[in-house]
Figure 1 (cartoon, rainbow, N blue to C red):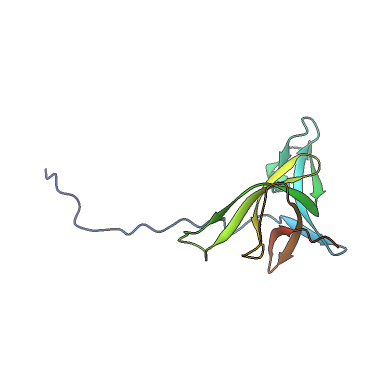
Figure 2 (cartoon, one colour):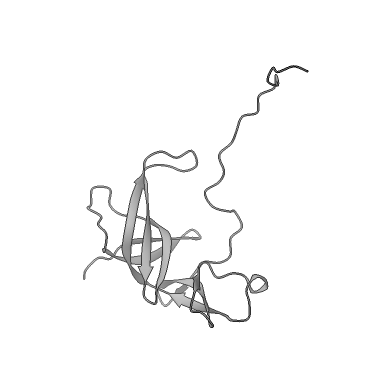
Length: 135
């Protein structure tokens, strides 16, 4: 038996960032973007996205969350094998206690800070958050 490594070489490929088939995560309602989350009637625990009916128990209610939240923390990614860089991800706290990881779109030169008020936006089947503009 030989201790030599196999002569063939298999190149590893990166895994996709998100599963291609995802349940519906948001809806547009009267110009607002709202996330579809699940909340246990018994414990109050949140799930996001809401599991499909076949994968949840009868004690889970679908709740619409948003359209505004507060940026809890964030990080800008400068190296990725699966998407253009730089891009920013952040945890967003929504009223009621739901915290969600989201893409944060903002002007590249603009200051971004924790506790920034953000608003949900959507387009091309995707959702993200942006800093809320004071009017």
